[in-house]
Amino acid sequence: MARIYRITVLPGDGIGPEVTEAALKVLDAVQKASKDLKLTYVHGEAGLNCIEKHGTNVPAKTLEMLKETDACLKGPMTTPEEAGAPPSAAVTIRKTFNLYANVRPCKTLPGVWALKPDIDLVIVRENTEGLYFGKEFEVFPGKAVAMRVVTQKASERIARLACKLALNRRRHLTCVHKRNILRVTDGIFREAVFKVADDYPSIKVDEVYVDAMAMRLIKEPEKFDVIVTTNMFGDILSDEAAQLVGGLGLAAGANIGDNYGMFEPVHGSAPKYAGKNKVNPVATILAAKMMLEYLNETKAADLVDRAVGEVLKEGKVRTYDLGGASTTQEVGEAVAQKISRNNAL
Ligand code: NAD
Image (tube, rainbow, N blue to C red):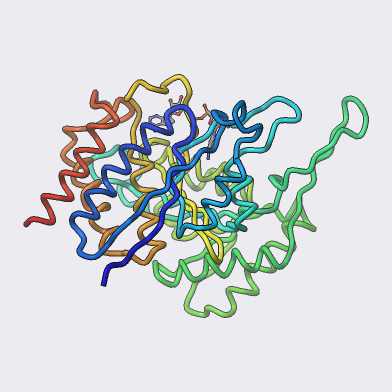
């Protein structure tokens, strides 16, 4: 029987439409290669590009569309910065659907420069609280305060997801915090992680202060498996981690809740490259692969993983950031062709 999934596609701003187009080429090849797998796409509007037309970056129609689909593939979106502008579209979608976990893998890829040959870690970032809770105010001119919200409930929830992930990997969980300074908020986070980890006795749990973690990601990234941390620390560490294995053009992220998942590249809309068919679509292709994993289509996800690995290893088709001169669409087509060829073997 056919396995049918409805996917909302939000191409976004800047380079978003082009990297999304390349990822869809890959998903089309996966569907042709996978018996009984059917993805139906619904294309929606979101991002800076629709503020003028709709007065917001996430129109109500798009939210309705998301509610009716199984998952979302999202391109990067430009965040409006002027006072009074709506918050980032990604933040709005994460909040609306309670996508409390941001999962960002970081792995040495074949044929791509990496700081170490054997990096394979995942950063699990709490996505709804911390300093990105979004409440800051000016007490009086020149003095402002931002709220750092940390609850036991949200911390336990993210810790459980991280433990489950670690169970299926190398069973090593590292809790990253700054409890020596942020004693109350990170005290709650740390206690929650260790409490939940007690339920998973086969997992080795340790802890590292966030500043030390920034250093150890450079010194010995291969020693880490699953890293669980609060919102802003996770955001910063995952950009650092992306650079260890080839840069933002290769880094994908999943935003996961109990009932929905949104998948996107870690990078932003890179406006200066918009429309140039130049940037690397691999991050978005790997985000699409994570979406297939979320839908429990592991064979289809493996097809994408293998094809990306082969294209990168051969090194013939690659974008400027990896020292090549191929276009965004050429990379998408090369990965799609590998999938078709591997499937025909
Ligand atoms: P950015 O990630 O868009 O780009 C920074 C630089 O990284 C680019 O100039 C480019 O050199 C490189 N880069 C990014 N993506 C690449 C790719 N696919 N291939 C090759 N090189 C790539 O960061 P920015 O310039 O700080 O942000 C631009 C806009 O994107 C901002 O409005 C920001 O708020 C937004 N943003 C959105 C998201 C999201 O939608 N989730 C995430 C991050 C930033």
